[in-house]
Length: 74
Image (cartoon, rainbow, N blue to C red; front, side, top):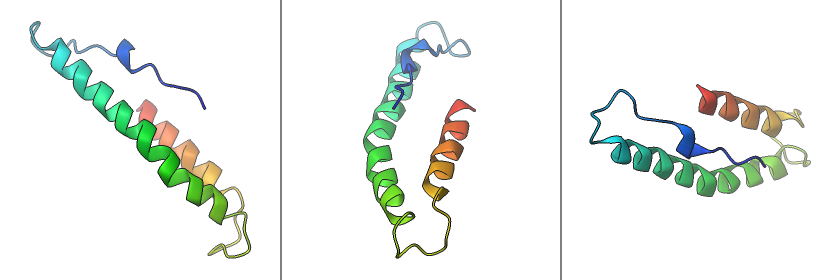
């Protein structure tokens, strides 16, 4: 899994005295995502290739990860 470098984003639209707050906020979101994504996508990945899947779409979890990545880049 590729780690996103959250420190490269800059807060150019804020006051010059507040870039640390924006960087801390972005780092907090990235930390939460690093903890929450395995908890969310591991059961999803285990469910859809199994026999008890709600519908037959073995690549559904991969598609969800792709959509989450696209949303993260926007």
